[in-house]
Length: 441
Image (cartoon, rainbow, N blue to C red; front, side, top):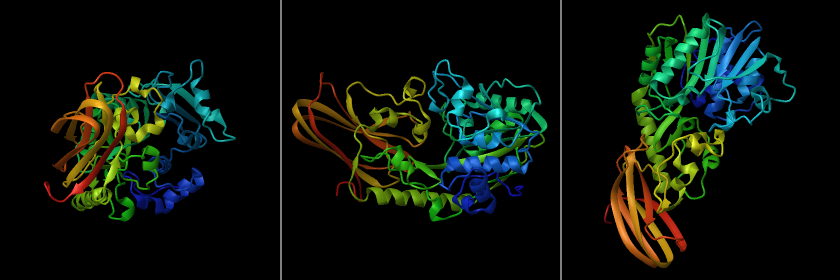
């Protein structure tokens, strides 16, 4: 099969019903459809390599930030040689590249190989994406699956692209997927960027390495493209449960995002046609997220009281937890915490609704507690501001409440602290959230 369609686009659920997509997913990758954007990335990378005739027994290619992804094995069996690269070291935050000491990179990757896999076409190398240990004009193709955004900052992205351009043959192709943000500016977080399209174009321009002439950013209005409700702040929910909600559009802190795929070639120019239904898309996504907030918080919900105090709640990579090592806190930025805090909820997006936090405490001894309502922008982990504060002496049962009118571009959390030394004998703690119609009603 030779693909003829444009697979330089954003991830949408309708792709799963396309005949080309279904054929690759079922016949080449041997997987059932999951409507997960990582699976979508593998399929469209494969489709684009197929479209440009790079999956043949004369082709030599490389995968960057490959980890131990299944696509390594599916691509390598179709070509002369595939070079899988990553920062394969024992002291890394990424479980997908965390090689045990005295273990070869190849053996590490082959632990995840399917039964009966022939590794004769596979080479595995430790390599920095910013400095490729490969000869000029040596590759027929290269690809990366949502590794680009983890490299660093602007100059690092540019350096990587320039290196890829250097090692590709004149007719070579680089297929890369990365994070695509809707309606928001780029989230410039080292190790986990999420991109606005125009900022990606600035990176491509700086590297003098451009994608194909047409990028399809259209998002059909359908129930399957509605952003997932953000259940993570709720008591009892974790990332595994969140992932069970099927949608290719992620919604974290009210910010919708998905994956995008680009095809870069040396012959491409900087002219690109950006296909978008932006006005319709913005209305659809905004109303969908607003409705999900209303559905979640119209009734009282118990909120996880210590989510931001635990590592899985404090990091900037909540959507990558399954790929992180147990000791990732040594390597990746985390939210700052205060020694005396004993409760700190996740940040919650309330759209433009008025909301109420209710805190119920039962303590065995007399303590003074300080409860704060904290506001920050949706796409920034810094710039926090305390917008309300209550200091209260507590002994036995106590209740503290905050009522506030949310800003549609901000998220909110509750922090509770005390300066009492020693162990706090906390018999009961419940933090609840609910939308309210009128402040003071």
